[in-house]
Image 1 (cartoon, rainbow, N blue to C red):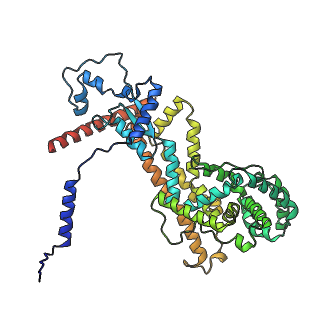
Image 2 (cartoon, helix red, strand yellow):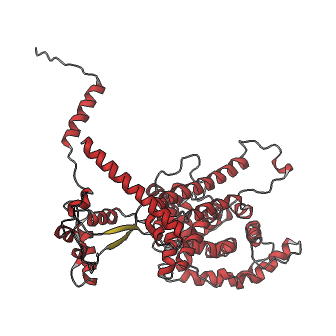
Image 3 (tube, rainbow, N blue to C red):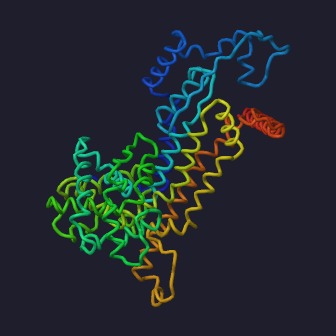
Length: 490
């Protein structure tokens, strides 16, 4: 009989020993960039500077020649200082990258001193407009509005299908022109969409006759339907590669969404793709409330994956993409969520367009950099909160802004109407909060980090130049003090 003796250790002690042993095995490795990316940048630079490539910006060789290389790294320069030729010009490379990890690490590798990097002279900047688009997309996904964005992309682009042929666009044109003759003012289909069409009219459509007769208004609407913009224009095509295209197309079609939904619904029912109104207005599970009590996604990738999964599931259940688009544009939760996306992101879209329109010359670009270095970028985030007090915009998102006593009597916090209103308001508030938090984190480097902070030196205001120099001097002294104290501690 074999006897085995087992010594029991406290699990926490054993875990600590394992972690300590594993830590001893891990060596600090310098993070290097993708070789393919660095070679591509070198090739592009080589095409512009007579074949020298990134070697043109390796000015460290000149520093060694003048005995200044050690001084630049330690802050202790030789005495007397060597003389630098007056005709010497420093070649500096400026790299603008977005949030893609290979570009960021590649840029840092190119600019990092040798031997860890290539030791090129220059600075790496963030691609502000690419970052702007990505930050807004992250806020949309993390707020749980990615399914709405994917749904809107489908029904806004439906005129380009199928397969870019535009056949459905011509079908929509023909159906819209025939509706004034085939649909009556009191038809059941028109009455279903009429409350939403009337709401769209109150925001700027021109066909309302203000007679007080709903039937007369519907008759006027049908008569002017063939002349409306929704039947004349295919609209801006929404695509991820076209920054802010969802806002361009959304604002163009926003006031005609309900009329467009009516035309699509009539076309699908005549084709036999949709048989009953119950099928037409059945939930799609892609609206602003599709997640129910589930928390919003924690990352952009998770939100986009969930949105794509839901949209593909809806497409598989339908006859074709035209039916899926019709059901989405008829789903009030989808429309409310889409308008919530337009309302919450309105300040960022207008700020994005304003910045692009202003950057038309070197002088204006410099003025823009000086403004942002002095916290000018906060204006777009401040305006982001304006949507929360926009009564007209909130009502278009399904959020009630005009309460009457007889309507709220008897309601409790558990009433379905109150629950729905609270869910919409919470979603919009989370969206606005995320925009401010994400954009603020991206833009703070413009005012707090170098080289962006040095833009104030180019200002024509002497006080701004002086304050920038004082801050720069303080930062340099603090940096060297920290470096010296670290060296003594080591």
